[in-house]
Length: 518
Image (tube, rainbow, N blue to C red; front, top):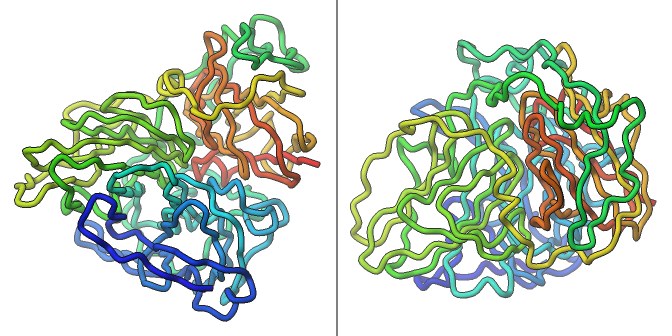
């Protein structure tokens, strides 16, 4: 394998990723990969947050920088080495070309042992994606960008922003605070590196009891939409007609974990990353929500933005300045820097809260003002309003679904989050065949939003309360409280694929099932 980092230039074609960049070129196959330096090394590092040191994880390339940035047509070819002192389960989030046997985050995938060297060789999926552990270690920043610049990205400066929620205490302590136990079916490993010293727990929301549930629900009535007719979407057993309208419960809430900080590219707004941009230049912000339990609203402030992709999938440009971003989702925004220059904060505000993080885009000589870490007012709750306005540039072809699955999202006593009343390990897998189109109807009578993620595939968001619509292609969708959401996916490869909530502590306590494709 040959690694050929591209030289950084000062023009707008520059790949500027702050602290997260690995430029790849001339990648070859597995045999040469074994003889080369590791493609990625997973290990420990020390990060300073608010003046305190914390031991966290990092994913670095041969150049010592974090993450991976490549160009369309290149391959992910080489060894991933586990230098932590515990077993590792890595997930290549959004990589639809990754072979089933090259993603350990699959049913029966096992763990890469201490010192393990996993060999990979697959074509990288174009777009803004990321990599992370499928374990509790994700909370301790075991995540990084995995971006492949599209051939048609144009003359823009690429700026990657990784968002994280951060706690000095260990994820196992957080889970205990929530009142839950690890029911992640063998995929909730600790990652085994020493946990940072805990700090006092303080106040946190109490969700140990079950959220009030709604009455029975019927299949969601919907009109036709662009060939996405609902087939096989009759009521679930025991569900009375018309009950969808009665999907109600406790008032929506968010942020059941108390965090010590929120990070953008490993930094808080006390000392944000300042990215040099050019006057009049176009910047593509590639924003990854790597947080484990926090959704954000991304705000470009004084810069008008166009959303051009979500979850690495292109969409028709949509103008705005404020966009929701749930855990696991990605957002590509193109902004134009004014010709008279200046400093332009790009902020992320915590859902239903005032907390802020972010970076600053600044032209040469611009004065960067000190930024506060709290907004004047709390943000709203995330919902599906953005997806209702977005349209995929490469949507699914018009055809009926071959089968439809209903998934009821639920909460049981003891902070147990369920799908169709079961936690992972007690679940009944969904089963389908290669070549089929399936639709999945998520029904959420709980009081929290759940970002539902399907491994190995991109799906189209095609319906919610109010009927059908031709939404964007995604791999993680917001399912708001008391709201049904329907996605459609064409199954193009066999395998057993996890389907789960991307709130780490909901997944860890059971909100996960499998889609078995034969």
